[in-house]
Image 1 (tube, rainbow, N blue to C red):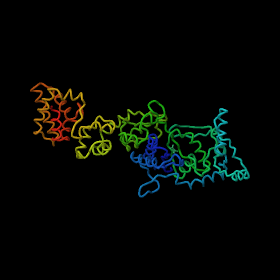
Image 2: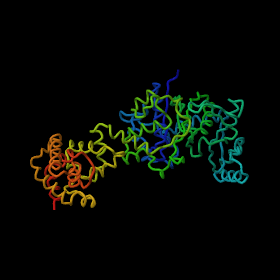
Image 3: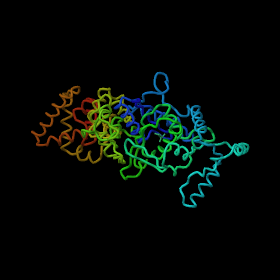
Image 4: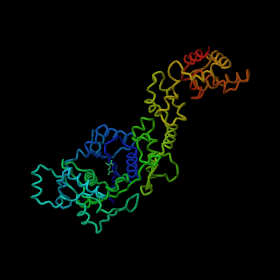
Length: 489
Ligand code: GLU
C-alpha cells in the first residue's frame, strides 16, 4: 500500500479559523492513526488577499495547538511550510502538458467580455458557464489577438477531459465521510487554470501540489465538494493517481448560520487572547464531528489519535456550542499543572504588579482562584485583592459586613490576635482561624461563617473568593494588619 500522506492547505486570507483548525486536526489524527505524514502547505496564489501576518498567525496557531507538521522545506533545523507562491515555476510545465494533450486551451477573452457573458446569462435566468468562445481558435486568430496586446489565460476543457475518462457526464467518487458523491460535469464551465499574469488558480495549483507531494488522502470541508469534481478531472487528464477524498460537515453557530464574528471569536488566536487554553480548544473541536468510542469527551491529542477513524466522522454539520467550550475550558483550567497554568495566566494579569508576589505565592493565588473560572481572562477580577495595599470595597459589602458594631468587634479582636498568627504556614493559619471562629461562637453565639464573612470582607472587599488561609498567607502579616486596621473605624 502506498504511504499515507495528508495535508492542511490554508489560504492566508485571515487568521487561522477554528474550522481550519478542525480540518488540520482531523488530518493530523488520520496521519497519526495510520502511521502517515501530515504536511502544511500555504495556498497563497491569491496575492491580493494574502498577508505575511496571516501566514505567521497560521503557523503560530497550528504550533500552539500542537499540530506540528511532519515535513517541508528546512528553515534552519525546523520545517517550514510549502508555500505555493514560491513554487510558481513548477506549474507552467503541467499547463503545457494539458495544452499538448488537448485538455486545455488559451482564452483571450477580456474581463469586460466575460462580464457581458455573465450578464447575458443572468438576464436569461441561466446559470453561467463560459461560452467556450476561445476553445477552437485557429493559430492565425490567436496571433491576431496577441498582436492586439492580449495575453491569454489558460482554461481547462472540462468536456474533453471528462469524455476521455468517463462514459457519462455524471462523475462519481466515493467520499471517505459522505459515501457516494456525484455531479453532472456538463454544468461545470471550462474554468481558468492559469491566469493571464501566469499565476495558477486554486483548483489547478492544488492538484499539482497534491500530486507532487504524493498526498494520498484529502480531508477538507464540504464547501470544497464542487471543486473536487474539477480536480478529479485534472488528475485524470494528467494521468495522475486520484487521491481519496473525505469531506467534513461545516461548523455552524448555535443559531445554525455560518459561524462568524458576530457569534464570538472565530480565529484560534482570538480564542487564546480571550483566555481559552489550546488544549481545551483542540479537544473541543475534535468533538465537532467525531465522538469517542467510550463516551469520555475529555481526552488528550494522543488518546484521540488512538481512537480516531475517519469513516466514523459524522457527515452532517456540527454546532459550535460556546457554552460547552466554556465548560470544557473550565475543566482544563481545573486540572492543568499549576506551574503551567500560572504561566498561561500571567498575560491576563498585566494590570497588576506581579513582582509583588513570589512565583510560589502567585501559584497559590492561581490554585486558589482557578475554580470556578471558565476562561483565563476572568482571573483578573478574581485575584484583584491579592495585589496592591488597599482593597476596593463594594459599598454594600462594607455596610453590611464591615461597618456594623458586631463586625467592628470581630475585627478589633482579630487585629489583637494577629501578632500570634503564623503567616508562613497555611495549615497553622487554618487552625488559628478555626480557634478564632470558635471564640466568637462560644462567647457571643455568632455563627462561624458570619465571623469569617467579616474578616473576608475587610481583607478583600468581597464576601466570597479564595480560601482564607491562602488569603492570609499570600497577603502576609503587614498587609493583613494594614487592611484590618483601616477597616476599623
Ligand atoms: N486553500 C483552501 C482553503 O483554505 C483549502 C484547499 C484544500 O484543502 O484543498 O479553503
